[in-house]
Image (cartoon, rainbow, N blue to C red; front, top):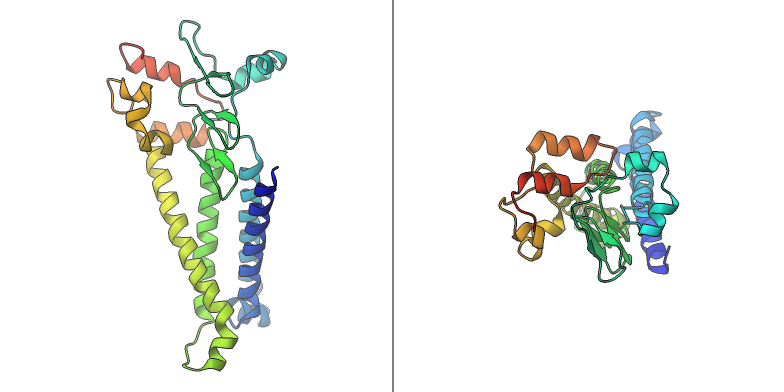
Length: 261
């Protein structure tokens, strides 16, 4: 873990904790429920915040799908690994990455920040200081979903504690809650747009990188189909959320295109 990643993760944890704590220290619905002894909703809210932080660390620290070198593959060539790692037909030639020189499967891309090629590369997310790829993309969606629920609930709670008066005294006592509400609104809009865009791309079986750079990616530019990996919304969602195995995208690509690139 680099120093930059350490600071980003510490900032995320501190911000999540500070916002949650601030909602309990002001006269919000959560504080009133706590005072009345109605602890169910405050407890669920705390557990959701904790769940979002744990998901954040899991997504940011896990392997997003780094492509292994031939030596690493041979060294760990166990039966269990062969079941999980997709086998590319021997007649299909895989290109070598110009940076790390590994054999790069289709839909993989080299991330210069992570210094690795990533399978089904989506994007490098600066907020998690990690790539989003084939292995951690479903968990990234789960994190965004839980985070959105926390933000929507937190925004409602923060609003419940705000009563507006035109006085300096009121502003002094409510400045933290007001700033918290504004921050929550901004984060909610960002997370909502991010979640919607990712769910749309997943339903089409494309990635952020492929969507933004379609005209520059050889296997898309030379394909007879606009999106050679799209197998229909239901199958796309099933493959993304329910399949535990990595996919040999070359098999799907060459089945749907008459000529290889």
